Image (tube, rainbow, N blue to C red; front, side, top):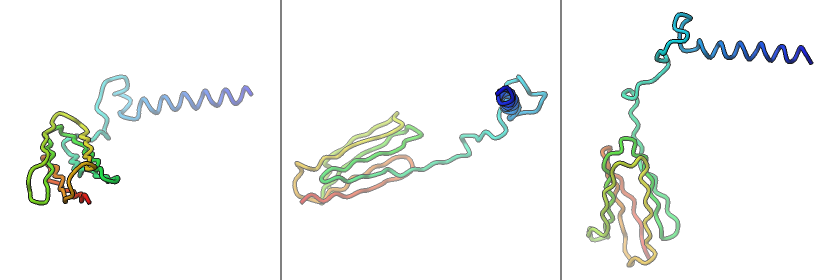
Length: 126
């Protein structure tokens, strides 16, 4: 039993020492330094399309808006008449549910626009 406790203590000390020295040399130990494996945000360019999920006569839309810029949501009918319009800015996640249960029979187009592009989804109400 004493050997197990002794071995666990040695492993814990080695693990803590390795974690402390992992991002720098022995001369950097205890100083605040930037990790060598840290990735700059300007290098990564993430472009995510919105996700549309249809359930019956409802459409749920989710968009990860990392830049938190302006996102425009519009709904058009089959004759290109604007039925719904909303602009959202300053939100990391843009979520919207569109309920077509009480809508007139028609083919509707949901248009989501952000700085990365314009995305469309259609919904047919019968």
